[in-house]
View 1: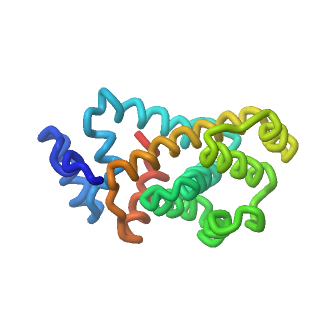
View 2 (view 1 turned 90 degrees about the horizontal axis):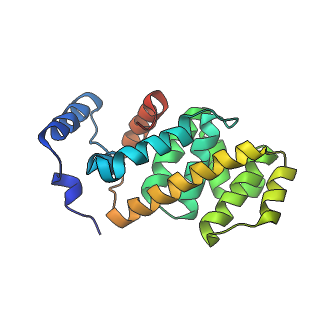
Length: 193
């Protein structure tokens, strides 16, 4: 159910910012951004800080890898908005859309390194079942992922399990392919703050 608050519940300065963004980008502000501006003291500021650290903070995973994790978690959650946004961003980060599509279509045959494949498999299980166990972690470690990479991947998983569920709960509007591409360029240039 789409809440009307996403269309009208903002202060005048925020409305002006949205108008400027639309003017210069040629695209409306995505609902994910709108949500962070609505009551930023309650959700938005903390969400942006956590997500930016997970997605752009120091990590052994590349930005493309983390965007692919976001797309994969969103795919497991069947969140159309987040799949579109992070498929576009991962594709642009990697400069390899077919690779991203391959992962989202069939992880087991996709052309990715084993540490990433095992990590995505674990994130998928965590997203779908709500838990993982020591054996799951041993498999990821045996595939070559470091403990820090696992911790970083779990942060991405947390951010996008939250975001994809909010996207569906609030009925985020789908963007056009050009809108997703514009959003991807913004995220790669400026991050999530």
